[in-house]
Length: 280
Length: 280
Image (cartoon, rainbow over all chains, first blue to last red; front, side, top):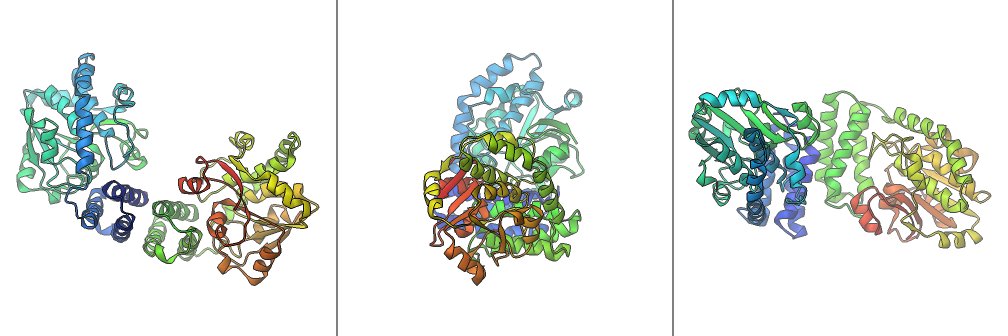
């Protein structure tokens, strides 16, 4: 998906938040911002927002000298999510349509996004968010496809959210679940290590997309991942970054996300902050 | 006042809003944004936000070919404000402390700012805003200074707000009121023409600051204005732009504004959106 003009100030704001999450040193924050503005000035050279985000995150890595500047934040988010995992299972048990609500739990995990809202108090308000219905939900089509499916490929988004995805993965068993993560740390997105720490290895085969952007840009993904993508009976792409990177690639997928920005919500035809499970 | 890192994405967002207010042509909006990012990349060369804003607005002028891209918006805001002028006078009449509430009316005019919130429905909610008390109000000091004052210099902010300032100017009569505006159109800031259209000529002497930035940067102001500034018995600087440009210049002034951004509100020690009348 193209980069919209509205994305530019938003990406710069995220760059500033990212610099502050990664370091307390104002001189480094200044350097990261200077690099970010340079990156932004070449916005037309980038294929989508995750592509540009990756460059900004490389500036964070460069100036902080950290290979995973959000390691602590990701660990914190995973810990917090794991602490409420029993509540998530209890919530699911209380619902009649467990497939719908397992999807909804995974979508709700999308609120744990340090990149967009690092002040999010994960626990606070989580119940309210869980109870919200999808604005769009292609459940019937999903059920139809599951009837003949042997496997499901889930493209992961942020660390922490991974724990919520685990509930969905368990609900989809005994199908083979392939859980695809970023090839290396980028913002607070889930890597192999984060997925393992979230317990995904118990319910899925964790693979790398081969892409280091915060969104699986297919042109940058590994041959191995592209084969998995092509042969998957059902693909679930989670989060905004993956939606921006994957949608329009030619192969349809179910996009599971919370529409956290006006552009994305407009694209999906839902209200801002609406939950979406849409086959495109 | 220095430019803070938080200002950078906000200035870019304002640049985008400005481009859209000035033209419907997306190609021109793109060009304005490209120039705006270039300007932003040199943010350390600018003395304050209004200085940088001026450059962005010059990009709007350059690409639209319009000398006053907000002429219509300013005329609309002035018309709308004039339509409620009788209500403003009635509101003032209903209050016991007319000096306090005349100041408050002028400060409330600060919500009419197409640059920050171009969707603001001026009439809607105006009464609620009017009734809000100042978070900080150096009224006693102001009254003290007025006892011996022969003149008051008001540094104007946006068009539309000018009409609200008229209420204050009338309340301050029979003191000589000097009303200083931008030297040329910049965003939706008030020029000589806008001040006249707002009826200020009836109650004040309208002068130009000699500065074309959306904030009276004293180093850029005319000798004539600086003489007025130095000899004024009382100076009232209205709006955020003037606060950013004038505060810390060495000569104290009363800063009258609504703190519409987190940085400004923090600087002034008030809550976001708090009303301020502060002698600094």
